[in-house]
Amino acid sequence: MSELKNNERNLGTQEYVFLKGSTNPTTAIDRFKQVIKRTFSKELFVGLKVVFLQMAKGPKSWHTVKYPQEKLPISPRYRAVHKLLRLLESGNERCIGCGLCEKICISKCIRMETRYSENQRKEVSEYTINLGRCIFCGFCAEVCPELAIVHGSRYENASEQRAHFVLKDDMLTPIEMLKNQNEFPGFGALSDDADKKVKKTPLAY
Ligand code: SF4
Ligand code: SF4
Image (cartoon, rainbow, N blue to C red; front, top):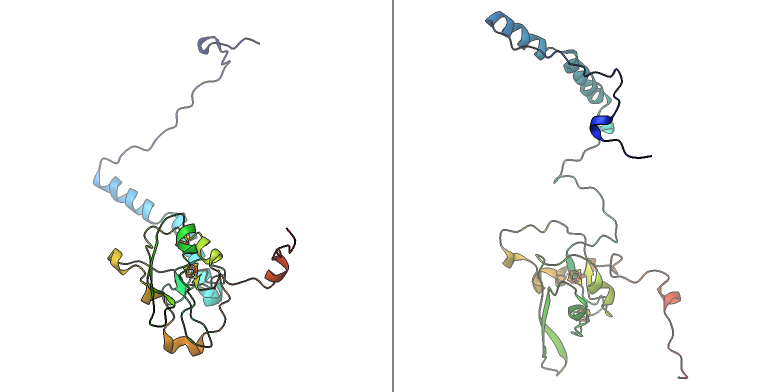
């Protein structure tokens, strides 16, 4: 079927319908009447009825929280601002400075410096994450072999200055908090069935 040109279409008896719009009031009394009519339209009372019915049901019917005094619970696997963990027994820093997190970071926002300690052991002297660039993908936490870098639950990381974005000391578990630290369960921790998923290296190859 060939396509009809616009001017060949048979519109039949269809006609435009012109709606009668309201005219602007010209006299003061008409303006006053219009204000009263609009102010006390029945939709206003329908809205008020809904509001008062909800108020009468009490706090149990409320669907909002008073942030920031109240916060909704978040999943333990939520990927918020990073934390650097310590070993529970000794309090030493878990990070061994292997650099895997720095290499895998797709935003290139991890910077670290290592040095030799007095005991000729490698230690991490500086560790920073530029949170202005981090996309919270979780790769760094997943690749860390020591469960040293993990994602905590602090998601409010607004700051007036970029310089306030995470430095090593901000992320590292304070030593006085260590006694309260349980084995980290959130993002970056091993799952309960991790042993089953590990592919053992074949001995003969
Ligand atoms: S969460 Fe992703 S982007 Fe952020 S520091 Fe880790 S690897 Fe980099
Ligand atoms: S945080 Fe983990 S992956 Fe990154 S350097 Fe330290 S031990 Fe290695």
